[in-house]
Image 1 (cartoon, helix red, strand yellow):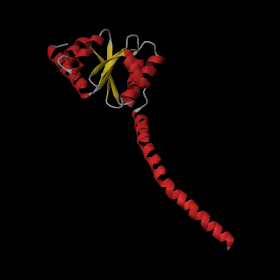
Image 2 (cartoon, one colour; image 1 turned 30 degrees about the vertical axis):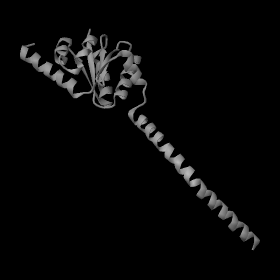
Image 3 (cartoon, rainbow, N blue to C red; image 1 turned 60 degrees about the horizontal axis):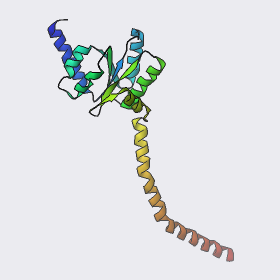
Image 4 (cartoon, one colour; image 1 turned 120 degrees about the horizontal axis):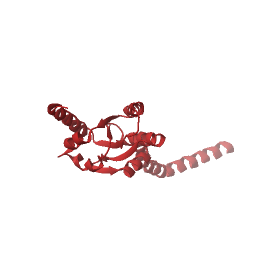
Amino acid sequence: MAKAEKMARVEEIRRMFLEHRVVFLTDFSGLTVEEINNLRFQLRDTGAEYRVLKNTLTLRAITGTDYEDMGELMTGPIAAAFVAGDPMTVAKELIAFARNNQKLEIKGGFMEGKVLKAADVRSIATLPSREVLLAKVGGALKSPLYGLHNVLSGPYRKLAYALQAVADSKSEAA
């Protein structure tokens, strides 16, 4: 590979890292091209791009960036899932694929400015999706308001029941 071509690849890899706030690294040794392509298509549906990386070029690309500490994870064949969508969904997809195909090994990742170990990626995969978390937060915020509404409307409801009872008793007496 010519030096100009290597420099272009390094810049492309640097751009990929800088454009994505979450990256998961995997060791794909032993996987066939067909299996890698299947994983690539599954991850594309979740909002991630799966790319096989060359370690030396990647180490040069991440030098001087926030991703520099990921260099310790880059041993052996490495592929990266660059996440543009929901990180939990991508982590779940990677873990499910690794569970069905023992050859794929989760190496770690980068999220929120921190390098993640493989166990961290597995714990992210156990979290509910973003939509479920937002629904839970919305429900938690809405619940006290409904309770307050019921407490404040209680006396008016009791007054309405009392007036209705008086009206019923007067209509029976007449």
